[in-house]
Image 1 (cartoon, rainbow, N blue to C red):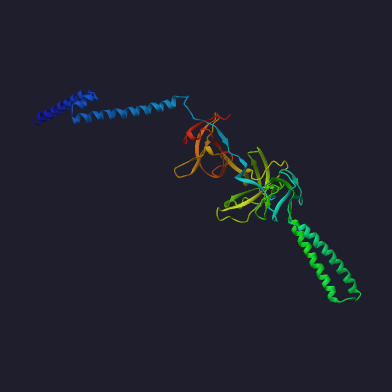
Image 2 (image 1 turned 135 degrees about the horizontal axis):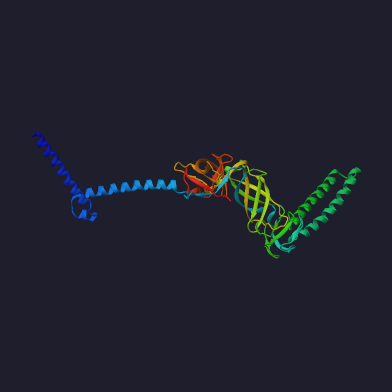
Amino acid sequence: MVKMVKMKSIYFILLSTSLIVSCGGNDSKKTVDQTIETNNLDLVRQKRSEIVAKQDAFENDIKKLDAKIQLLDTSKKIPLITSILVKKEVYNHYLELQGNVTTKNMIVIYPEYSGILTYVYVKEGQKVTKGQILAKIDDGGLSQQLVQIQLQTDLAKTTFERQERLWNQKIGSEIQFLQAQTNYKALQKSVDQLKQQLERTMVTAPFSGIIDDVITEQGSVVAPGQSQLLRIVNLDNMYIETEVPEKYITTVTKNKKVEIIFPILGKTLLSKIRQASNYINPANRTFKIEIGIPNSEKNIKPNLTAKLKINDYSNNNAFLIPQSIISENSKGQQYIYVVTNKTKNNEGVAERIIIETGKTQGDVIEVTQGLKEGFEIIKEGARSIREGQTVKIINQ
């Protein structure tokens, strides 16, 4: 009896399994749309599980096939790159500024005496020498007064000399001698004063140079400190003045070499800093420097704009690389790629190294930490590779 019950149980289980498999088999043949139309939640879930299982199986098969292709494909694509060898170089960094040409020998001449400008003896562009008379102002009768006083002075001199001879011979009184002496000296001083005033009516060149502009024409009324008469310029002692940020006060110093570029003239000169100010301007935190300019051709004019390149840093053993190959990670660290394990067919492995950089000049930057002489740096193609990737070097 017990045996009969066990047989019935086994039969029931086999029958149930057969029915489930039969139903499941029919359902698995249904399309996704047909399964959705049944509105049966269990069938929809079962269909989804079947598709996910097939997807996982396909992905595993694809991975196996890719791995086999990698082993069998001898013509696999390797990134092509170019490289440069790290070596020590002389590096000169230049601070680039802009300045204006000026000269200490460029002034506008004002009159020292009021009156009519009666004569202008020079023309624009004329060369003059120091002390040369450039113009004359009407003296208002001073010259006539000088003639009269000069005559009185001559008479007083004669009287004094005679009185002096008599006094030396003990003839006459002492008071007569002193009066003659005092009168003569007073007239002499009057003559000197009139001569000084007359000199102020003559406009002279304070230094040798060229008359750049005749500002006031002949016949005009002029006054001291108000009327501009002439502009005189000397192009021999020219210099450039510019302001330098205070952080360069220890590197931009007297006698530093400077490259001067005049874009308008298409001309480049070499010079030195002839003076560096010891005063920091509190308004903009800068200090002034002066750079002398050789101007033998006289084509450099005041207020001409110039570009300056000042050598503020030098390193005879610098590692220099292009800025364009440097990347930055999420920590803000700079890195580049170098080639390691290089083979005879110029293939190698890209290795990322962290570097620290210094000053830049154009597209070149100095590397202060992270590089050693002989490293082979990836140049072209550095942006499209990754750590540990095999690369092929195609340097010319």
